[in-house]
Length: 230
Image (cartoon, rainbow, N blue to C red; front, side, top):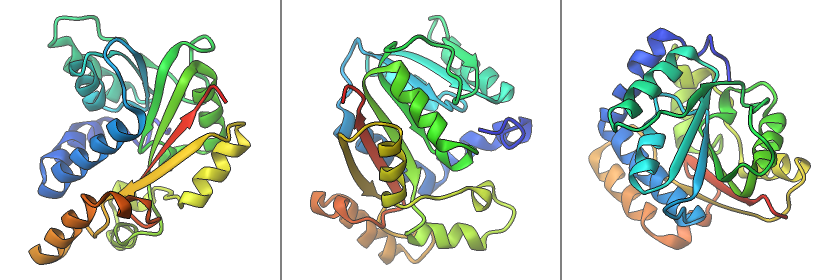
């Protein structure tokens, strides 16, 4: 992930998106998907690759997991360390490139990358490294280019996501298989657009809570869980 893409100005604005109506809802749905697909258990060791300002690290720690984060942006690392320091525990957040993780093989039970692949130049290297340091499973949370949300972002010039590379489910499965793993499950959530009339948002949220629809390949957010033991 580019440290210039996520510099100081972006680090300052990063959390503000989660305070918007859409951002808060999307965050809840993304977390629900990770829990549903990966079932993290208290005491497990988790690595968040591209941890940003540490929102997921803080949440996973509250669930009783032992958390470590890495990010290639010094500003994001500083923000994550400050967030975690409030708990009184050591903040294990490191400045590192996701394609060259500074950890031994099989170091973590779960390795996650949430909206990170969109900003890396060689996603296959990131996935290979995640599989290497995981002894159990990895999770990829990725924005879907076959979704209404993708079209909206492409029309909103100047936004950071307008420059991101969105993926399809098929592209993600190909990347994971080329990295050497075949035991893969996927789901999507956020079935509707981020912008629109309230009635459309209401219908979209109803769809998000119907388990069968999570297998539709056009939700804005794709969750991929990979058994790294295979």
